[in-house]
Length: 388
Image (cartoon, one colour):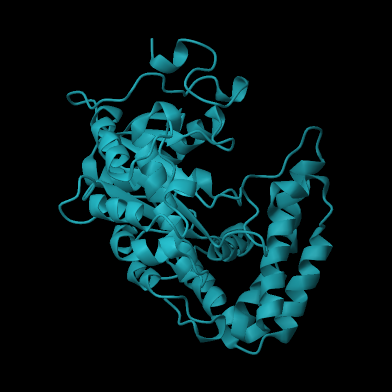
């Protein structure tokens, strides 16, 4: 009997039947050929509400290839070096803020060459605004062209289209209208729209205005295609009209991010066992979907996952009970602070940590370019962004 079958809801703070199976009770340990454990946590998560003045720009997924048995002495080392007495290590509060510079030095030392976590740590960074643009193409334009027998996914055209719209859109439409296009996409496609308060007509009113205002060819051509996808947009929301109908989780970034992080680590290590900090979005059913997607589907931004992913266990845990998840929390928080710095939000944590964290940002991150080193610098104004 697996650990997560022993009782209805062990090892997690989440309650209910949706979280009954995939819970890790015992401390993890790498045993023989059973695979390496990888701990995963997030910072900056807002569900599928990916745009808005109060929303963070970046989602940071921190992962550490380490088991609880290996993590425990490292956590104790951090406690001694930082004089922390709290029951669990959390980046927020104890490593963030103006007064915690010395603690951040300890964290940097662990991540840099010679540190206990060097070579074991990775940051998967998601630009939420770019995620919205990529989904705008993926859900509607790619779907329409696929029906016509055109493959823009495998040829890279869809990704190129999304990157150009993201890079040139603010200049072509003006920042205010471009932001309205993103906001309208989120309002129409997110699960909050289950009651259809935002209709296809509402959504395409903004699309039509953007097309009429655009004066850059790449943007105009993409928006012209988007204007032709009313049928696909209507099909997207039609299931919500059925009894107990719901909208798809298309804008939920955590599910594809966990899938991608699993792929990244499997390509590095072979067989892996993933321990993910418990999150409401990560139901047993969604974990099942992640496993299926690792076999059958692709990256949320038009890149097919490599074949031959070797996944052992995929489980959730409560960070207070798993020292490996506490290390993943520190890394995800550091990645988030560096992302905020890149977005132009002044914060001392980002300033102190970017030199240690940027080399850990994976090239497969959900960014509108293939150069994670750009994150070391404050983001260029929208009007001067170059296409990746």
